[in-house]
Amino acid sequence: MGVLIASAGLCAWGEVEPYRSWPSRIGPDEASQLPTALRSSCHALIGRLRSTRGASLAEALLDCQGLLTVLQADRAHGSLLEEIHGDLEGVVHECRTLLLDDEAAVILLETVRGHRLDLLPPEWVLGIVRHPLGETQRLELARVASFVAEPVRTICPLPLFEGELVFDGGRPSPRMMDTFQRRQGQILCGDGSSAVVRAVLESDWRVTIEFDADRAWCSRIDGIRLGALPAESLDDHRDAWTASLAPYGLDTQTKMIGQPIVVSLSTGERFSM
Image 1: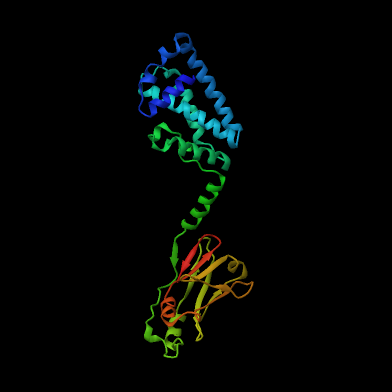
Image 2 (image 1 turned 135 degrees about the vertical axis):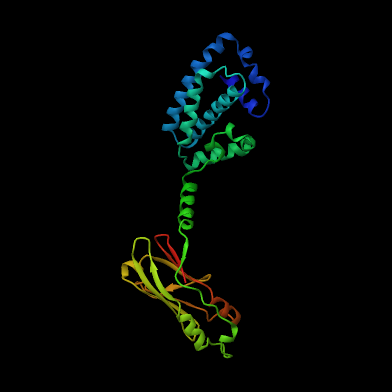
């Protein structure tokens, strides 16, 4: 069996002659026993896949990788082992349903790098070996996916401001404050709940975002940003948030005041106004 798997591995890299000649290399008696031995190996591997973790799981998967090369090589060169193709396919299918732990994933990743399995055609390498994902990676992917799944929905049109709307003294003009205060609207969530939101710009460049909603709804608010500037909740009720533009220069203030206000909820929903 070792000769067969090694020959199939060479075949995966384009050296086909060793696999074509494997029956003569091991002799007729041993060749006749191979199907039974391979079938037993397949059944034992499935048991290992279902009962081990860490390094033992990685080792079992590498043994499965060897059997996949046998399956692919035999399909391409004679199908002398066709009677056990179903057993080999069963092992491949079992590998597709596995969830790796972090230790097994790291070992497989190093194996892929060390043996350059990523250079082989995809059908010659188990997907879980080519792209091993452990528990940590899966959780991180799920976290990132939860952020990008929900689109940002617009609450109301975004007003634009020009530099001449600011007094020479460096304070926002009444016209700018009135225009900013038009930022208001109703947030409609996917579960049917809603809240009214409004924004206020003070003469000292303090921005306040206020919500007209019950405490349970406001507790969903994860964060609020004016462009890239985060706002802070004024109290535990979380129905009023504030941010100050006072530390910034006049050019930056007039640009930032025109940035969207983004409301992020713990449900993953985001709204912009």
